[in-house]
Amino acid sequence: MSWWRHIIFELRALIAHENTRMTVFIAAVGYAILYPLPYQHQLPTDIPMAAVDLDQSVASRRLLRMIDATPQVAVDRTVSSELVAQDLVAAQAVRGYLIIPKDFNRTLLRRSSSTLAMGGDGAYYLLYATQAEGVMGAVGALNNEISELIQLRGSPSVVNNTSAPFELALVNAFNPQLGYRNYVIPAVFLLILHQLALMGMATMTWVQRQRGVARDRYQQSWWRESSARLTAFLSVFLLLSLLYFYVLLPLYHVPISPFRIGVVAFLGVFFVATLLLGQLLGRLIPHPQIVVVVVIMSSLPLVFSAGFIWPVESIPDWWHLLMSAVPATTGIQYFLQIHLYNAPLLSVSSELIILSMIAVVTALVDYWLAARQRTSMPRTGMATEDL
Image (cartoon, rainbow, N blue to C red; front, side):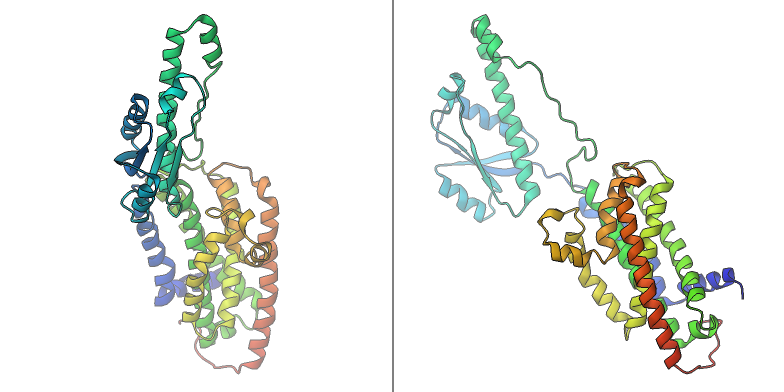
């Protein structure tokens, strides 16, 4: 039988087997629809904040009104001390507090430095950062107002000394909305495809091994079996990747780079390494449900090891080296560079080499294991045309 007919057989088996069909197709569509939903309203607004106004001046009240007018923060209440504000944060009645020191108004008019203190719950970094953004914007606006007032009332020398030589405009190139969605969803989409590829390939390998289909159909040829199954699964997951990254991401308003062959080439190497690892797992496990449990339990460690949520520099070297054996750890962060940031494929050449090494080592171990299993198992004589 020709190699192309073997590929068609693997595709038919992928569609026909219920567990594999559920894992590869239905789960892929379900995750693509359900996962981005919490990020549709990704930017928090009107975060409640308490104010500790120790100055009680015109300038301090003006600052609080300006902070309350920002879309990020709502000054919920004014309290008498920092301890009261901390108790409110601990009770989650507010998410942060601002301390305005004494003599705030006088130091501003003298053009001396005045230090504002802001506190908040660091466990919710997005809320904390959004509050800081709102406070800094209001402080900057008040500072400009006072500078203009001094310039209007001062002498020419004062105007020259207080006027800024230029203005700095900051533009966020790759994450203009400063939200989680633009950098989390593409990375998690690739992690989802990685996990589904592992589970689907392992399940199909286990099923054919248990039923003797692969041994009888491919006549003891590891190469024909692996290449046909790998080509079938690779074509499916490349199509799912195009759906995820070039159809669904624009629908969710996530900025992406134009379609490039380099992105598909990187995904091809990534999925080859992933699918070969899945095939190896399918030969090792006694039951495919074990793979489902292992893959699901590994998802959270992979998320924090991939570098798009937790900095790689903060991960212990031994742990990062251990997790680098999984294609997701190497692939996700550098896929974002070429897909979102439009980096050239040559900039991730070292990562392509690592993925290729993972694929080669996994294939060699799988070949050795398959040879041992085939020599130790008797022929069943089972029909090979269907599962």
